[in-house]
Length: 269
Length: 255
Image 1 (cartoon, rainbow over the protein chains, first blue to last red):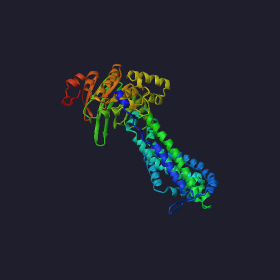
Image 2 (image 1 turned 90 degrees about the horizontal axis):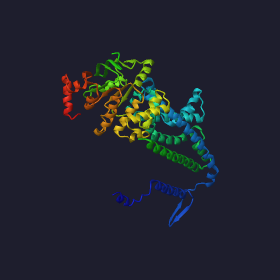
Image 3 (image 1 turned 60 degrees about the horizontal axis):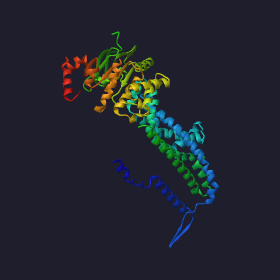
Image 4 (image 1 turned 30 degrees about the vertical axis):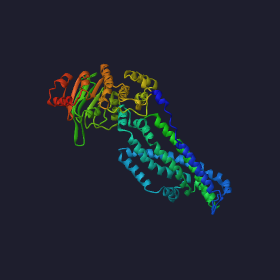
């Protein structure tokens, strides 16, 4: 019977997801290259003029624009740390039975989620100086992103913590662990596994919302693209360079996010 | 009275308008095995959960091995006493509640290291001995998701024992198990009783109660209706309510 099973020919695997993805990416890039090559395609009576990207401009300015990646990454990393801390604290406050803390966190979340992120950038960078509080572009951007994403992530954390069963808390308490020990040894490690996919998505979203900082004079990717492209009337090329970087960063981060989730899924459960 | 390891005095608990425990008094001697039986909703689980303050009692006093805890206090000393009491009282839950992100060994050494500040080598040695005792040495480095229900509950018992408690509470330890898996858990509990552990067991396993218990308590509507040796309480009950419960229970195929 086992021999019979073994002799069944293995079904040929279909083209995997990855192969298809690579194929489509190539096709997409091929089309882009043709579209922006400046070629004139003559096909019988049809004459197609494709757009012409200025290679000289790209050659001259791509390095200047690309240097903005450093600031973009710095901003994203510092802000995600700040947002995580804020989110964690306000999630704890939301769960706590202390009414003062609970309502304070509720107000924070409501206020931040009820106003546009763009407005929050302006408030911090251009509103606060009216009261004598002048912050640099970078610090303002970190504050705006941390506060904003902290509010959204707080709800994710709260849901994650509450998704850990009550029985876990009871078991830890019955063993003599304090509420704090129970939280960081038993509940949080499980909650973090639950929220990792959502937090990863927030990080990916934030990486791109760093572009808003260009509106408050921060020379990150988008700011530099604007600075290089706009006065020379090659804004399109400049934006393409910036877009390519955002895309690349997202692909890289998604890859690591996938690996992390895979590892967590296999360590237990 | 001087020879008691657990004393419950005037324990009351209600959930909203519903009175669940109606002034319970109880004394348990060292090494005594007490089985608590009764319909669901009779307050037996709540009684266990009040002993280690998983439920905060409304009134009453709990004393375990020299630690006395009155209900309804909120001081810092109360908090420290609570930890001391819980160190002395082990608890086993119906749904095991093993920590899924930790291996079997890590489940066992967690509380000894964190709560008792035991060094890792000592905690591991203790845990390995306990795993041998419940017959699961080979599962040492496995995650709980890979265990059967019976194995999970045996690990949960070992985890509670790792704190070297003086009293063990069992809250329907076999109710979540397939019938063929209850035996291995009851065996571990039988050995534990033989080794002289003080045990309070809420259970529907009347066979186990008859064989292992020193005393059986029948609870109904939040108070003790009848208590005594298994021969009395399970075979020749004096109270009509106990008889009715047993008749219905046996009629429904209970053991």
